[in-house]
Amino acid sequence: MKKVAIILVNYKDYAQRFLADCRDSLRAQTYPKELFQVYIVDNASTPESRRYLGEKFGEAIIIPREDGNYAAANNAGIKRARQDGYGYFVIANMDVLLNKDWLKELVLAIDSEKQVGIAQSKILLYKGRKTEEKEKKINSLGNIINFLGFGYTDGYLQPDREIIGYPEIRGYASGCSFIVKKEVIEKINGYNEELYMYHDDLDIGWKTRLAGYKIILAPKSVVYHKYSFSRSVRMIYFMERNRYITVFTYYKCPTILLLLPALAVMELGMLAFSIVNKWFKIKLEVYKYFFKPSSWVKIFDERKKIKIIRKLTDQEVSENFSGKIVFQEIDNSVLKYIANPIFNLYWQVARRLIRW
Image (cartoon, rainbow, N blue to C red):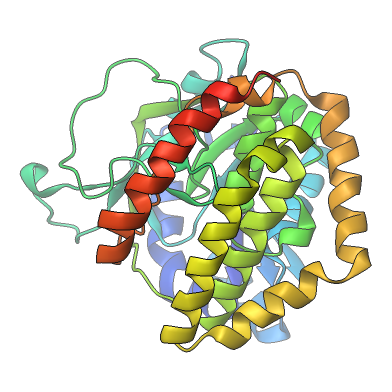
């Protein structure tokens, strides 16, 4: 059996809200205790938060950081675990309850085939400890990539169901709970710290598939996610900025040129949406980022790294990208009845023109 490092990231009072249930379900795992170690990256660390984590989860290794960068926090956890000799790394949220076989099933899944680089748990919505079987709803069976850089969950709010085998995820694994091999982390150079937060799991998934690895679902590794939708100024900024970073990083230049009309139309729509919903200043901050030469230097540096590890073409990677944009907690009639049919048609034509 493999030695596994479990990486959790704390941010400010996050642990005070969620750590207890997560810790108890980690302690109840059927996977041998001597073969896994929990690392908690205390992101925006204070003496008080470090003391709290040490008191509440004494067997975990605490890694203090101060800047709040989520992508960098995961890299810090993985780096320490690699130094300690671990070969598999689990990235997991703290706001979860874990089935007792959660870790065992993740390891079985990632060991099921040599070409598998990442395996994601089946993520269900947490509805309280007394949730009946018939009431269980899906949070994610893997995530879908839209060709314009958006990402959303597959299976959201569908009734839970039995899934046989290890179906391939054609988009990316949710950062709520996935396991990744050391060789994959080394190949893709870990998390892109420029993203800071949001789109980090989409980024990991896209470049993992470009490197030629499979991403699969481990349906018997079950997570109950205390998910709640919220939007903040900070979230909108990073979501908007980071989807462009991923598009400009991972598509080849001919693909970007082919998609420019759709990107431009989408941008006009998002600009209008930002004005109506009073976050136009956030859009200006996104534009400001891309007007900085230093931002493009970082993007081109990442493109050089991707060129070295790339084993799949844009055609192969994007064959399962979606033409529709789904904002699952937001019912937007213009998007649903006007924009999505147009973008979907555009993508159906464009994907057939991609031959590189």
